[in-house]
Length: 206
Ligand SMILES: N[C@@H](CCC(=O)N[C@@H](CS)C(=O)NCC(=O)O)C(=O)O
Figure 1 (cartoon, rainbow, N blue to C red):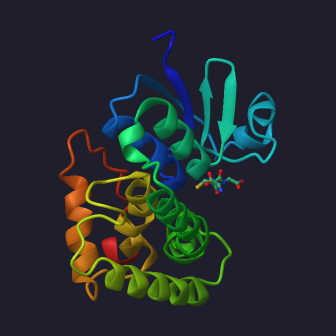
Figure 2 (figure 1 turned 45 degrees about the vertical axis):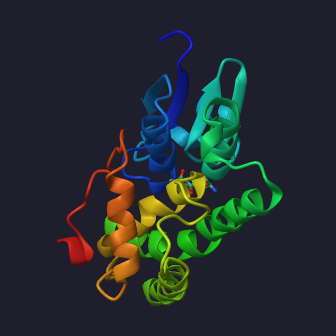
């Protein structure tokens, strides 16, 4: 395992699940290092020397250290699994569009709503659910007649969108109104190597 990519992770984090899922789907040689967020390990040394922002996920690939889930997906795909990140300008830009959606509306919508129910975060659940409705309405339309978000095969755009979308019911956000999204999640789950994020029995998933 000496050449393994080290992934500093937390099992119930959708941002971390993106990286664990991609490493599994792409068959990357990797090692998981669980960071004890409850004990505040991410706000102390030595973790802060890896990521001064005090957040997971972080990877170490040899001497190279990188934080931020979407940046990590770009790096890992470009370096080890190029089929997951198209190089033609239009397709690459489309992938970036969905990484932005994951970093903004998905994070502030379904992910934030789930933070309230799973971790008791002091966030505005109604506002988060409103953003979730907006982004899922958008994705439902974009997935009409499409199997994948970009092109004709899965890309890191799908990996970035998957985790918090699949676990939205834990944050009291129903996926019932979204048949295209539900079918799409099943396609991701059928991919060889798929790895699930642990379910938490809260919200609509209780
Ligand atoms: N933009 C970052 C967000 C990462 C993030 O919010 N991580 C959360 C876990 S899901 C975290 O480490 N929270 C601990 C904290 O902020 O104290 C990414 O995409 O990696």
